[in-house]
Image (cartoon, rainbow, N blue to C red; front, side, top):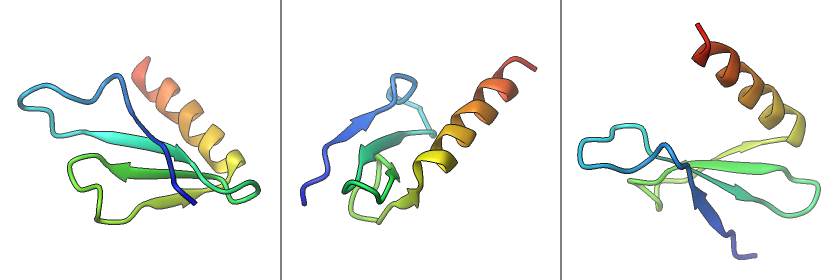
Amino acid sequence: MIIQWRKSIHSGGANDEHCVEVGRLAPGVGVGLRDSKDPDGGYLTLSGVQFACLIQQLKQDSTR
């Protein structure tokens, strides 16, 4: 299976240290997260529920 990775809109820029990509894995497996500066370095696998919780937490943290 080929994973189509999408880069965060917050990634990029000359001095950006936080480059993240997300990719949908096989049905029932979940979502992959990887460092876009190291695409061959592997990825973290999250279930759909875990990914939704991560996004919710990131949104809460950004409002503080």
